[in-house]
Image (tube, rainbow, N blue to C red; front, side, top):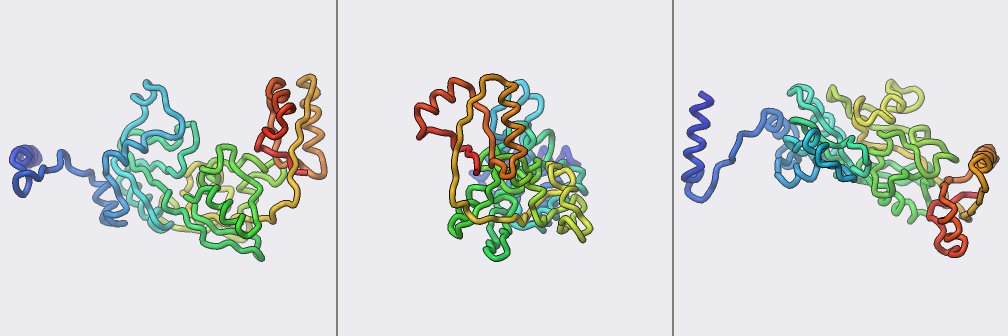
Amino acid sequence: MRRRRIRIQRKARKIGFLGKGAPMPSRERSDVVDSLCLRIGDELVSTDEDERSRRRYDARPKPHFLVRLFCSKPLAVVFPDSGRCVAETLDVCIEERTPAVIRSGATAYLGGTIPIGKSIVIDLSRLDSIEEVSRNGKQAIVGAGCTWQKVSEALRSESLSLLVFPSSGLRSTVGGWMSTGGYGIGTLRYGCLHEMVRSLEVALPSGLLVNAGHDGLRYSIRSFAGTEGQMGVITRVTIPVRKMPETIRTYLIAASSMDEAVGMLRSLITCRIKPLCLRMISGNLAGHLRSNSDQLPSTRFMV
């Protein structure tokens, strides 16, 4: 029966489907794509060739032999607009035994967002809303697909700041950084992100949408932080905010040997007021910066 249907489709393509000039699709959609369209809606599921091709890679181009071995076009790209939609998508993928690859900012360089084989890419870029900025409560509730740049701009208008940022830059997303550990600029002083986050909304592979916290909740933040989506997909984050500091200063400290540099680092770490960030640079660059003080690195030490 299947061979007969394929022959009919081939004949239909020659003359046009439903009339001349309207070609019939070259292949049938997979069951998992049809199931996703029925469950969450056609408008959130894309099988467009360009959309699927663009999501074969992350920020860094991969060697050609790795692309041939591992990178493949996903069956479809899902653009969920809510945490419930993410949970429904995971539920369908589990039912259809289809791998799901979570993607957001894709600013990492390690291939964690690259689809392999016949899989579904869940793109969280539409979960980019800033739901609340509370100056009195000293917190912000943001979607996992929201970039740190967008969060910073919203907080700056209220004279607030996070003072903690990923080393990959402000174009990375809140959920992505949370899923990969949350270490970066500012974590030396304030701790990594998952130690500061107050609560998470997480979509589980079982299709449940749950809240995770530190105390008194069934699900712990540590169960999902740094797991890169393997234990659940982070869809919303409640993060603490702080007042903008009155003074920011940058210091350039030179060391004559590596042992001396290590000693300086240990002394800085044990200081009562810890620096916001430390950056090691070469002697040649240090000399250049010393002669051009206006070109000091944007990575700054807080005092």
